[in-house]
Amino acid sequence: MTLDGEALEQLRKRARAGGADKYHAANAAKGKLFARERVALLVDEGSFVEDGLYANAMADGLPADGVVTGTATIDGRQVCLMANDSTVKAGSWGARTVEKIIRIIERAYSTAVPMVYLVDSAGARITDQVDLFPGRRGAGKIFWNQVRASGSIPQVCALFGPSAAGGAYIPAFCDVVAMVDGNASMYLGSDRMVEMVTGEKTTLEAMGGAKVHCAESGVGHFLCKTEADALDVVKRYLSYLPANWQQQPPAAEAVAAPEKADLAALVPASERQAFDMRRYVKGLLDEGSFFEIQALWAKELTIGFGRLNGEVVGVVGNNSMFKGGVLFVDSADKATRFVQLCDAFNVPLLFLSDVPGFMVGSAVEKQGIIRHGAKMITAISEATVPKICVVVRKAYGAGLYAMAGPGFEPDATIALPTAKIAVMGAEAAVNAVYANKIAAIADETERAAFVAAKREEYERDIDVVRLASELVVDAIVEPHELRAELVRRFAAARTKDRHFSRRRHGVTPV
Image (cartoon, rainbow, N blue to C red; front, side, top):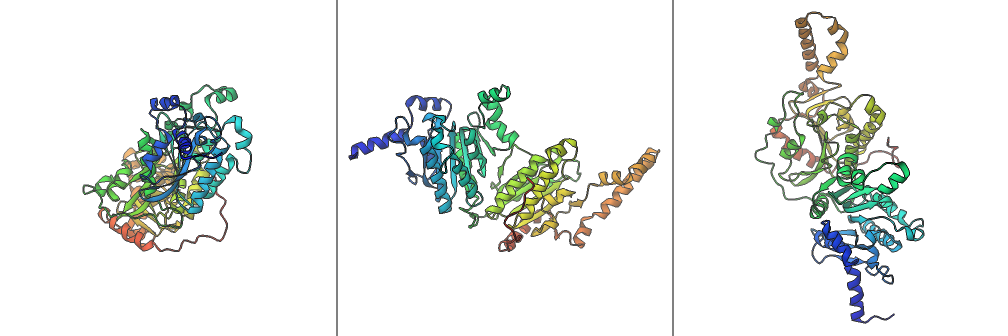
């Protein structure tokens, strides 16, 4: 078939228009943008170069086979992207859809640039399953390519609608996922399928909605009010990362810490009094630079990117405002993944410790707290980027290990004057050692005096000056000196040798 200019333009117009008007209207009523509008909002104007526009052009009602793929720039930096078109058979996958997605991930990997996924898909077209599902270039190849690309190039997903069945694994294999509240969902089986298989009556929102995944399962990382917010998350996330594992994170103009930040005043003298580590982080980093990740999940641990004197750092901090800052199964997993992300993309790690240790008890033991804690400690051990441990207030038990304590080859262990490092806190230690003797003292005043004396003795044993004198910590720093100290130490560690072990890979205690 020979096309003249007018016929070709009509073909292009049909392909770019997406599905029928009624599907565009239905999406607009839900506050959803057209896939091509999402692309236009995300990328630099005029930079998008599309591939596969004419996929399935011979079929009726399948413009571009329901997915937009191509290359573009975001803030002047090259990326590859895909965007499901939910006006075309609800964004479902056909054979050409799958091939387009595979090709664009392969291009991102081969050209060593970030891969962006704008997801809004009902999953595979069951009618096309033989063509798209089982073969060497079937849907499984998408996930194989994502796994191969993981840690080699940044992969970020914005989820605007459903991500169903096998398609739910596209977000799962990304570094981070931004979900639009009210519209985005992830699930392996629909509510109808769940009822048929298990008898449970549920809804897509209750089972796999944005709030569920961002606050309960941890599969989602950012809960966004609008699609524009989700696209802003994609842009901001990429602004902290290099294009690939062989490059350094992009530096920015240095910005001072907030003028009103008084780090000393933020930390209460009493261990029993909680404080918000997020405020501490914001007071320490360049003003406005903290980009918190998974803010709604496992809140006893705060993680995110920020900048110190313009240079990117990854922050891991215990937050005593939530569960006393104790490490649980979810917070261990949260730290593990973030540390691995930073290590993959050459982002130095700053640990801010105020940790009582890992949670104990039958409930967490049955959940595998030992296994999950070991996973976190494995990630800390394997991370070869510059890493600095700051003991802000306390580091007790295996919590010290999980926060990159001295045994895990941090480039420095810094203690604030309020710092305590011990197997456990004074109160717990005195009770553990002298429980029987304390119980045997009948007089209340005498008993209190005995406990106070033993606590004072214990506190002297773990005195921060003693820890410094025995080289457990490398420096004792006043809060107002900490930022400058960190800037100098991270600069000195920038060229460190990053070899770790002779092996292919370890056996992670998953």
